[in-house]
Image (tube, rainbow, N blue to C red; front, side, top):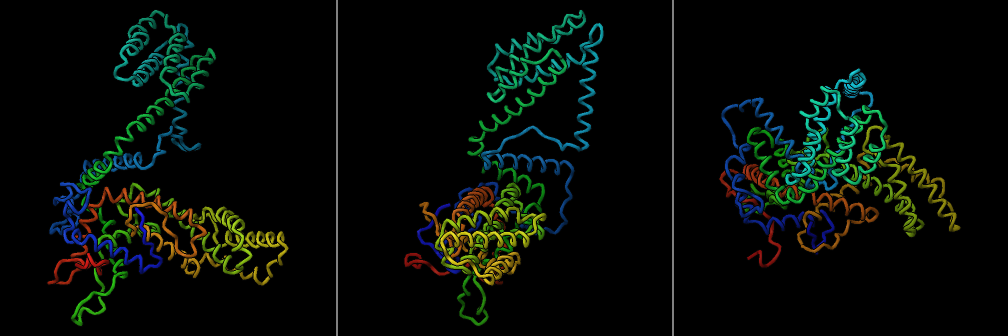
Length: 532
């Protein structure tokens, strides 16, 4: 995200940054649905259909038909897949692996075993029967043909001639099918198509035993792997093109879902509404001459509201409600960021307690502090899970920290920590498990302040923003998380800004007093030029 030369160090300063950003875009706030106010808006989203969910209706909502539900499900599936391919550069498909003792795996194993047993029984008859074998050969032929490029006519003709089903049927009627020869040709052809990673599998097939049933079974296993390789290669090839068109594609898909399901933005609306209320608390009192206006807050601008809304996602409690619909494709990524942030905050709280309680012997030894940081992070890994007892883990952390500090002090011929100080230190560290712990609350507030600075910065250079006091111990991790979260949010804004603007227009204008000029208060100007 663009960074700023001015680096605010307090919540009030950050709020001022957001207000200043809103001031610079006051024309956009006066006309929230204007195409010139958002770079990524399209004609279809400035029409009435883009704000149907905000329009009151006198009649009850029309019940959805099964076809509409299925169409929305397909759009959602396509939207999720396209988004994952574009955002996750490591995305690839893997062969499905069923749970070892699941009913589905048992049924699959039974059916497959029955098929291969029937094939073996047919081939062992005298004379052999080839009904199942011919079906397999036909399926193998179709799979090999699916690997060919449109212009590979010579190889296509060769495969069709060797695996000519009419000819093989005639040979079967006369007990003249050379199934071993056909299997050898299939394996050699597979070697021409496969990725280098499958060379060892092809080599094993060529060295296979004379058991034709086992050989065919292995051929199908390797063909399944080759299919997956082809799919992943196709995904990798199409990713650049998807990246160029992803914003328009995702927005169009979401628009089609919204048209079929008018309530598809209900959670997003509630999320933005709560963010307006929170952002209003950061605004200065409204400048009104009448007594009735005293004590009232100015309405926040859309930039401050959206920045506040995005920051709320890092501390989202899913037990109190689902994520906004516009972030449904990033739910897993957000959960991972939340877990990482919780871990970093706990580590920072513990280290701040250690440094403030002991002081010089620890603060003057950066190598010791780094070692304590790594050990604390390892012991608290998974603190978000229900299977981990946070209090017990913090107790183990406190014991290990006291042991490491005493060991470091002994190596430098310093006196060890007094027993009373160790007991106090352990108690303070264990108290971090409480939600209202002062140190934990302080760290969480400063992390929120840092992310407000990140979103408020508007300069184009990439100089790293300073972290608030006390967070220097987790600065690399916090900066990396901030960059990842900013990238996620920036892409989300490119896709869903027209929908956010439609919601903001309704919510902010509805909060205006009756008879008041429908204009959002933007805060004081930040320069002489702006005041003019």
